[in-house]
Length: 241
Image (cartoon, rainbow, N blue to C red; front, side):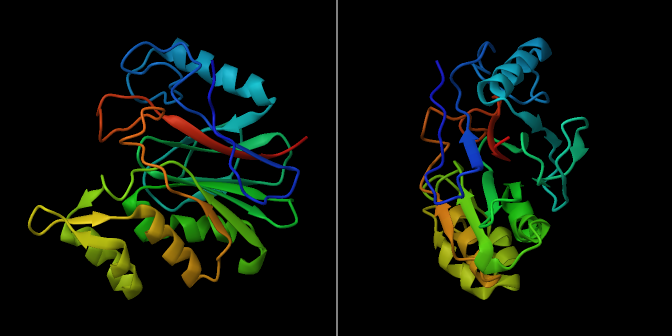
């Protein structure tokens, strides 16, 4: 049985979105059960069946990516697997897809409901500007954009070194707010949701929804930090046919 999340945000009626969970697939442990990642040593036949179930559930064509923690955002194309960390589309039925297991998935749409985008943002991609690149793919003004932040590692679980804090602060000093000292000397606890909101706000994007999840502590989701050998769930956004 599926227990997928449907984002609660004021997107136009023709904009549809969904986040899968671990439930509803055929993969065996430790990928149980709806693993959608084909790069994690799961049985490929199981992954393909899981992807088929997802496509059939919403009558969509997901555009899968080979994510590399970069900032490349491409036009979503279900016919090829591009090396990128974001995609956009204006074609109804084609789903921009971000696969994660602690990294931040971000879904974008314009207020007109004519174009959508999805981004995969670990800290490296976030610091490098993948959210900004996804925004630019919409080709509209900041005030015309809505963003929904999906399940990612929470601020109580995301311990980082000083180099991560410095990478953000060099670009945007206010991001210091998103880091608090850890119990481990020299380390910091990072709030990836706050980092995303601060960077989006710096571009004038303030209609940001979602957040508040923690993949590490919420057993509904795959988490690489909790279990390194694990699957991937997906956050998808598309225009209704």
